Amino acid sequence: MFWNRKKDIVLDCYTSNPFAYNLARINYGYHFIPEWWKQTPKIENISAPHEMKVTQADTIKKCPGIVTYYKTGIVIPMWCELRMMLYAKHEEKVFDGNASHDEIDITFHIADQFKRFTKEDGHSLKILSPWHIKCRESVTFTMSQPIWSQRDFMEHLHLLPGVLDFKTQTSTNLNYFIIRKDNRVELNIEPLTPMCIIHPHTDRKIVLKHHYIHDNEMFRKIMSSDFAMFNTDKNNIRFKGQMKKKKEFIEKVDKMNKEEWKV
Amino acid sequence: MTFWRKKKDIVLDCYTSNPFAYNFARINYGHHFIPEWWKQTPKEVSIKGIGTLDGESATIKKCPGLINHYKKSIIIPLWTELRLMFYAKNENKDCAYISSHDEFSLGAHPKEQFLKFSGKDGYSLKIESPWYLRCREDIQFTSTQPIWNHRDTMFHLQMLPGTLDFKTQTSPSMNYFFEKKDHRVELNIEPLTPMVMMHPMSERKVVLKHHYVDNKDTLWKVMSSDFAMFKNRGHGFRFKGQLEKKNQMIKKVDEMNKDEWKF
Image (cartoon, rainbow over the protein chains, first blue to last red):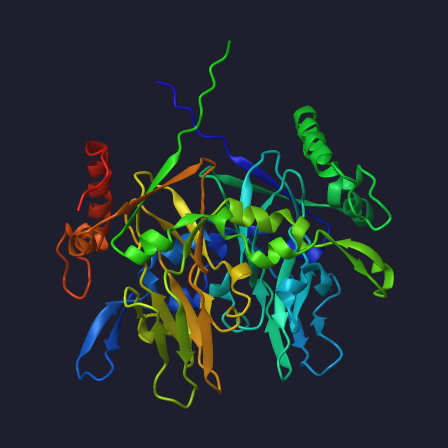
């Protein structure tokens, strides 16, 4: 009898950031199961309000939903300590970041790009991920916020979720969303805090391969939108039909070149 | 001549005895719930006077991440209009609600069940789903908050994400979380607002089948934890090894009975 085992899906994860590569790799979710969850007992005494009796109940430690959420996910952890200031409504600035090293970039999408969502007080806060992922297969992934690991700042900082593929693009940028409040808000994000969790739309096993790239400039070019293989107009907007052309292009490339990319 | 073997669809049987959910607000494919604000957003906007960004810029209307997030998902929409009140820190009560009909109920997990996450001011808010889901296959689904539809509520009410299967249990968890503030917070959630978004961890197509069940009590019994086929120690506590026994039982049941369930 021949057993046809399902083929693994390989995600090649490239970075030129030494902090991300050495100290905070994109990794399997089970490494990031929260400490508070591990420390929670399996059973706890529960006192019902307005009743004198105390009963016992299972705790979240027995909830398969949360532990499977981590075990089936891929996590991008924070690669520095990051202190953020979200300024108040009446202030000119929107936010500031102060990191433990300079290998982190924070930018934003202008409100006009999604004005009907931002409304008056909403702002994008985009943390440029050091990781670019390449997958030769057209598998999609859900990117969501691992809020079980973000109790202290989840109220102020929301990851905008999405479904991505890593065949036709390589970016894993972290698009967060904030609203300005009447007062300033200060947040501190510790290194290795899970910043996003990615779940594949497949039951096949995911294998991560980590690659360190020395030539940062060339790396940025190759991993840029459309792999820098097509021209865009003066505003960096694609010409009509270009997205389709890019997909056909990468399909052909993946058929012809089965090796890891070199930069 | 080659034979093309099409991948088998995943069937998700969706049972409810709630006439509002069945007739007006069915669990459905995500493409039905793409936000109106997104549809109204133009594809490009003019940007003036923001440094090098002066000119035309693509908007979120061109973001494949958002549209695929919906197209690849299954959504449970709200089956009532819901007004929620979160009391202030200095008040005794936690939460109150008004719904447009009485086929809706809210519950809560006691804080003791997840005290290390909830902290002093965090509370569970559990929306009792009118839907029970049943899948004969062991497929995992991520369950996350459709925050692109929650612009007005997302900073006060956050869904606790997880990964579920509908072979060994039938409940699509709708566990939300809120934190008491210095002042009261009032939210209004309109009918058909997406409340849960699920993505299958499979490359196969998911087919939804909706079933209306007249016999509410029987549905509730059969779909309860462990399908009411095992005794427990009281207060929902399983005997040791019971979870494993349940999983073996349902595997055997699914091998023997290929018909839809009746109530």
